[in-house]
Image (cartoon, rainbow, N blue to C red; front, side, top):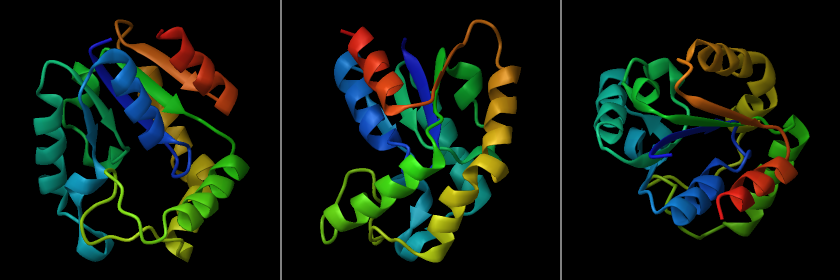
Length: 169
């Protein structure tokens, strides 16, 4: 594993998973949120998002954490040798975003964009709630279309996530 893409709903644990994956493999971790969101959670123009993801995926070794599937094609999935989809239950993701909001109030995080506070607004909660209906089918279709050389891991529980990381050594 040298080029790993990590996908999943908000609250699925993508950032923590990517950090642990980077530590276990020695690969550099790229968090997409700080690269594509402007202050006050304003998304960069789609071409800028594509350029940022393309640049991140151009390296020889990486863990790229984040979705932004509407910005394809960027080369991220074409260059990946591994894709991990954190496909956790909706209720787990919702519980985690509430906990994260309480835990991280007034704290900065490496995976948060500058000028963007951890928020629990109705748009974000709605996105997490609707992820299984609105986004999951597109992720599953993306995974089905990947070439056979790409190792795909669809992790459906916190236990499967722990087992995956433990198996890395």
